[in-house]
Image 1 (cartoon, rainbow, N blue to C red):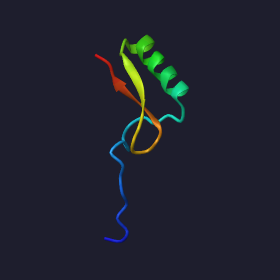
Image 2: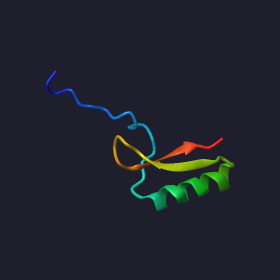
Image 3: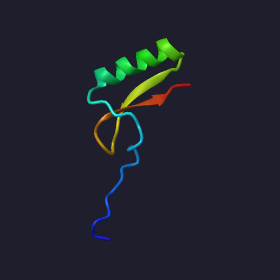
Image 4: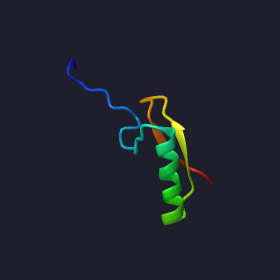
Length: 54
């Protein structure tokens, strides 16, 4: 299993480079679809993702 690539658990999530970009994406989701999201920095890849806020 030498050539087995490691897939990060966040591989299927939207990934943004900065907190500012993630905050903007969350604002757009709220405005366009009334979906409340919050940015968080991923411990696996170091990029920013969005999570649901209830």
